[in-house]
Amino acid sequence: MLILLPPSEGKTAPASGSPVDLDSLTHPELAGARRRVGDELARVSGQRRALTALGVGASLAHEVARNTTVWANPADAAARVYSGVLYDAAGMTSWGADALERASRCVRIVSALWGVVTPTDRIPAYRLSMGTSLGSVGALATWWRPRLTGLLDAESDGGLIVDCRSSAYVAAYRPTASAWVPVA
Image (cartoon, rainbow, N blue to C red):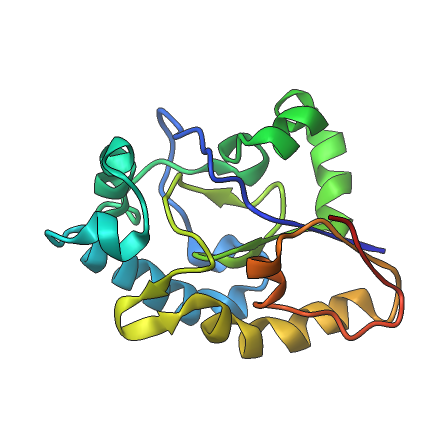
């Protein structure tokens, strides 16, 4: 079984720690694609019209500014960085190492920046949505679709996929398994 989650819009920025190591994330073969999206995110976030380009309001300017240093920012387990309603309700921040490790075997978080991560993958906080067209990368769902489809289809191996993502994230990976259960 594979459980697909969206990232949260809300994120808790780690106060300390090493920056993200792209080669240590789930599916290190995505490192080049992740680097390209992250570099473009940092570039776009440093521009005068960054808020408009990323589709956010002035109240999120500090989060957009943080994107400019995404490669240097401290990273923590995705389960602790993502802090939206779904993650709070699941209580992931209170899970011990064993529970997080078990979840990482079947939970995948589809992300506009990382493509796909597990709850234990160490990432920094960032502001980017899958519905964004990001500079030279273009529409992120279109960017990630060919990169995620084979990987996640292979992981599911035709088994049950419980999909808790919104339509913007489904556009980046639409399961081909007959046992795909969208939860909306």
